[in-house]
Each structure stands twice: as structure tokens, then as C-alpha cells.
Image (cartoon, rainbow, N blue to C red; front, side):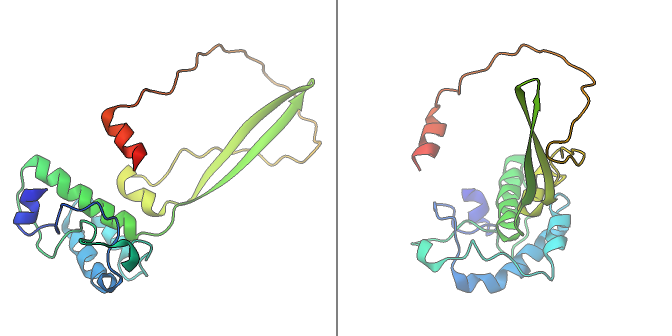
Length: 182
């Protein structure tokens, strides 16, 4: 990341700030537009073009010293693989920060059969928003249920029993402990 900074491809890297100054918002569309030439990020950059960008990453009160790491107007040419990955991470995070909200629809279904309560969940992505940048599809696996009414009687078509074991929560590593402490 230091080398990308020294070559002028990213802003100052020694910062833990996750926000930019509010006056920087006006230059974000131009910076994000530069990513249209990046094969992995082009469609996300194009999707933001001409739209109002999310402003939640701009907050003068949360910027002390240096703002968040962002790309600059200098587009890198051929980079070593590790630097390509770092540049893509910074650029992708910028796209996420200025993309729309991720919204999903959720519902829980409870069915009683023979005095035993069964529960299932319904999940559906309504708008992939920022989540679409790194996962590639912008879709989670949607769970769909037919429409059921309260107190509706349903036929039982199949019954099965399965045995599974639960796993304990993994122990902290040095990195995960530091992350939790933040």
C-alpha cells in the first residue's frame, strides 16, 4: 500500500479513519468514474454514474488528521499481483461506501403440527446495493414460501429426522481480538 501511495495511486495509507471530509464528496463521481476501465469494477462504477451517491462516508467530525484511504486520479498500469489486489480492495471499498443501501425482506413462519412448533425463515434480497460490489452477484440465495393464512390447515407430505452436532464459537486469534476491541 505504501508503494501505491508513493506512485500516487492511493491517498495517504497510514490512517484508521473510515470517513472523508464533506467537501471531498464533489470529486467522488469523477474518481469513481475512473474505475470504468477496471474489468472487475467497471459495471459497479457504471451503475453509480449519474446517480446521487450515498453520503454516509462523509463526516467532518469523524476525520481527524487524514481521511480514509481512497484512489487518486492516477490510474495504475501494470502492477504486481499483490499491489493489484490492494488497489482493487481500496477501489471496491470506495464503490461500496458510495453505493446505495442493501435491503432485504425477511419473514418468519411458525407452523404447529401435533403440538410441536416448527419455524422457518424467509429471506429475499430487494436491492443488492453496496453488497453487490464484492460478492459478484448481488444476490443471496432467496428462500420463497407460498402464501399461507393464519390457522390454515396444511397436509403433512413428508417427515424426516436428522442428527447434527453444533460447533463452538472459534477462539480469538490475535487479529480477531484486535478487531473486536476496536
